[in-house]
Image (cartoon, rainbow, N blue to C red; front, top):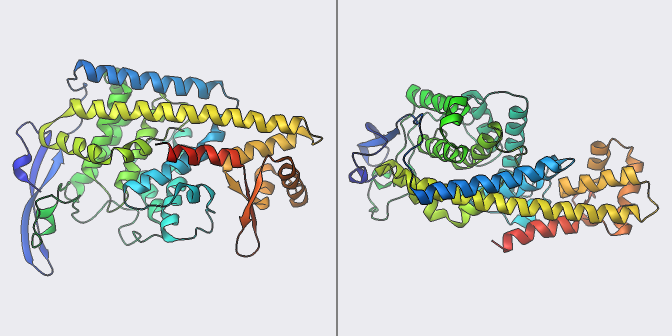
Length: 405
């Protein structure tokens, strides 16, 4: 890490660290420990305030639409699958969105797909805890991290725990082949230990503090909290994905969003280099204003994109139900299957049986009837002969989003 890049205005301290490389021997360097987050908003310029206001307006429009829907939760899982694909791609685990949308969570076709789908399970757990009114704690984040890395290459003795070793982030452009990793790194986050645990606990307390919400705009607070989490880098793996999920959790917990359908990672993935540059510039020179403006622009674009998707899916849902109404099917149960198909993207007859609490025979018959109507379609047959189905129009909307980035 280039220590000369850190100005006197840096919002933290450089602390001494040392260790031994098995091949190169002993090394010594510095790590960056951020100061606690402020109780007042950092000084922001007019353009940044306008960007924050635009983000708030876009989030309000998304929230207003969700509040008018009979069941906005139907759109949570499609959003989570899209978010899982993008947030994993940002961290180097790529799977095509088309495959992520239709993958079987119980039998993913690869370790990479397992890693992507673990994000969905992790986020559903986190949202459920918030809905129960449970506060975010260090133990809760540890549990989420364990879910994220379960049965993946990153799973190991440190899974489900705050890291117990020094890590580095990225690589400097001028790094030399013989440099120690810590010297070649672009950024060296806090050393492990009790201070890291205390700083993470302080961050979670800051996020939950209602006083913060009275003095700092929710968009600005989400930006500050995201910076702090990424800079602490508390886990050996999964910090980026957990940190971006916490953006949505924060807005959800503070009441800015009724339903956590917001997908933020597609925008940050499309602006990957700028994203990392702005985070780094806060650490080196307290460049809060450009970072907050960038973050607000990302939230605005993400909220508009999520809003457009929600409205499109609502329209498709209505069209699918209209086909059912014009048929001879018993409307209530068939409409329930339409809702199920919108929410689950791809599914088996057994899943319909369980989700709609029908007998297997009734579920199988209902699926067949909606296939005949053209509302849903066969997706294929898995090994073992299990058939999967999906709603093509729902699928096409989500896949079309990826190609339209």
